[in-house]
Image (cartoon, rainbow, N blue to C red; front, side, top):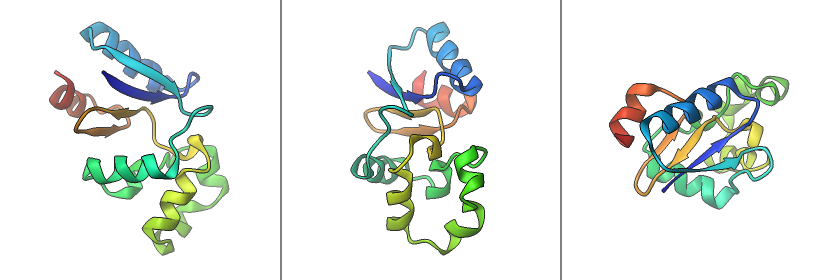
Length: 117
């Protein structure tokens, strides 16, 4: 069963969860704010995903903007970025979907169709 890290007030998360329900895809919902992935988990997800690390950041979120991360991230090492991501679930792009051999960040329906159907 896939794990879906979501934030209950996020409209994209709501849309993604509705999509999963409509497709009959079993999933476990995890509150990304209360139970966010730790640094070790994020390292595994990042390695498994094949995605650039920037795709794991919620670039439209308030913490991202308040911290000025658009300017800081390019100068940070991957270790520093992963440590930062682990400090606050609201920094993590959502929904974050973890399958047996894949990771999805955000809700892009074509990517979800490819991995989940």
